Structure formats: structure tokens, C-alpha cells
Length: 384
Image (cartoon, rainbow, N blue to C red; front, side, top):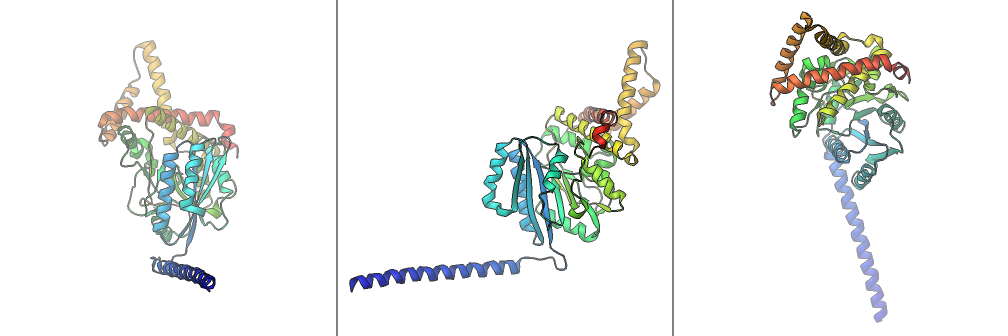
């Protein structure tokens, strides 16, 4: 009798645990359904599926910040499906380890790919695009050293609702508020019309409303593009830089709409020192030179003005050394340029000295890069 009683107690205990587990599961299911039902929805807006593409190497801290910011923006928006695809471009065990540590938190949201050797950024993006699911409506290109506000996908929806036929939508990339003194000074060059001409809207919000634009207003570190407009290899893989300009120019030439939204911003780290800043400006120029060679109809006079100024200045220096004098026109242009640079640099909290120093250095690096791309990169520019 005692054994039977003991067996009945065991069965009763197991049954109680089973009933408790079943009731708990039902309660969690009911709570989940309730939370889904009360989640705010944008009535009349079709659910959008995004794939965010990130190319990274040796910047694990910034990469993790970028991934987490995308996840928070996705959680904030109730009508956006998201998949984050990260391509580790070359040997980088630290970034791979950091991404694997994020898997338990983000699950299927995160897809990690890597290459045993470093590819060009354009080639890496083309390879990563091949992994995008067919269900994705839009591709979001973002750099690993950038991060987005929680309202980012909602801001994208706002622009898309206003321009539903847009092929590409983008906005400015801003310097983080916690950036250093040198980065704040260099940011003045990029955000100034005197510094980057029409492209200054890439670095600061200009105008209050979303509007049609050209490729000069959009940048790849913060760019949404319709998946069905990209094809299999949309980026010219031998471009050093500015591969998105070639893509956007081709979309615009096909009559498709490009949209700039000043509210669709993210934050993007600026180069921390002068060497990296000048290398960046040089690469921008070289990529622009390749772009012009590939698309001559995309040429604009401001693209070659810095390079011409460098050549004219070299001529003036040689003439000064040989004759003891310089052309009067060069002196006048130099004074005008110094005045404009100083005035634009005065917008920096660091003072006009930074403007007077960084403007000519950045312009010179960019100008040399443009002529390099035009003259020496003909094969690279026309290659796929």
C-alpha cells in the first residue's frame, strides 16, 4: 500500500508540473498575442522587408554599435522586417567573434559572411547582395562606423510615402556629438558649400522636406535602394571609391527617381587624423575620376577645379623660383581662396585657423585624386 501511495504521489506531482507548464505556455502565448495586437501600426502602409548590408574589417566596437542601433530601430518600427547581413572583408577574428556573441540576442536577424582575403568594397557588396533573400523589398547600405537613430526606419517610411516610386532614398551622415576636436574641424570642410560644393548636403541636413535629387546628394553610408533595381552586380568592382555614384547615375539616366531626405540621417565617424583625412579625400577624388571616365555626361567643372588649382600653384612656385615673381592672377585667386576658406572655417568652434589649413589640404588631395582616376585608371573605370 505504501508503494502504491508513493507511486500515486509521483504521478500526481508530474501531472501537476505538466499542467502548470501547459498553463504557463498558454499564458505566455496569450500575452505575446496581446502585445502584437496592441503594437502601434501605421494603417494603410504595407509592411516593408529590408536587408541592411555592412562591410567591415578590424573595427569590432563600431561594428557592434552599428548592429545594435539597427536592431533598436527595427524594434521601434512595427512595419519593417529586417535582416542584417555583415561581410567581414578579410581575416578579422575579433569582429567574427563579436558578431557570434550577438547571435543569441538577435537570432535569425543577423547573417554573417566572411572572406579569407580582402576584396574591394564594391566587390564585397556585390558578393553580399547575392545572399539577400528574394523577399527583401529594399537594401539599406550602411558603413560599420555609422549608427542610426531609433526613428530611422520610420523616417524612411515617411519619405517613401511621399515618393512611392522612388528607386533610391538617402540622407545625410552627421558627425557624432562626441567626436573629437580634429573631427569637428574636418566636418566643417565637408558640411560647407565651399568645401564640397553640391555634395555638402551629404554631411548636413539642408532643407526641411524630402525632395528629388541627383547622385551628388546621396552617399553609400546611408542609402536605401530598391532590390529589384540593383541587378546581380550593380557596383563596378574595380572602383577605388564612389561606386555608388556610378550606380545612382545609371538609375537616374533610366528615368528613375532619387530622393534626398534631410530627416533620414545617421551618424558617421570622421577620420581621426590628418593622414587618414587626406587619404579619404584622395580616394574620393580618384573614385570621382573613375566615375567621370565611365560616365562622361556626369562631368561637372567643380570636379576638376581643385586639381587645376594644384597644377597652377605648382607652376606659380616654379616661376617664383626661376624669375622671382608670380602671376598676378594667381596672387588674386590665392587671396580670394584664403578669404573664402577662412570665412567658411570660422563656422568651426575651433576657429578659422582650421578652415584656412584644412580646406586647401583636402581640396589638393581631392584634386590630385581626380586626375589620377582620370588619367591612370582608365582600365579600372571601364571594367565591370
